[in-house]
Image (cartoon, rainbow, N blue to C red; front, side, top):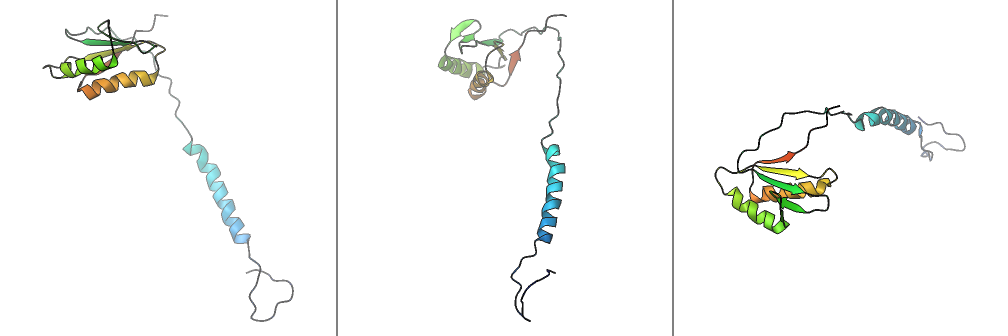
Length: 139
């Protein structure tokens, strides 16, 4: 209950607001948010291992698409445009068995460019799309 000081007659409404319960609730919420906020922004840091896998042999008929940093595309080392790539992949997607597609990208190629080529392959109906990397040099 609030304590009223001053002239107040019997039956008159108190014109002051008691803010003590409001402050108590706000302090409790502040403490809860201070505790939970670091937990919500916590990210797990993962140091990925470097794998030195054995070289995989490419089966006959494998399609290799190379992507340079400047966006140039190559189909088995032959230059190709984006429209030609989609058309040729649609033809290859109808073959049985469907040949795998291996995508080689320069080290500095942007992720969006690699994903664009992978989306073209998926939209053409290719089911086996993989990425080619070069192994780390022995240290």
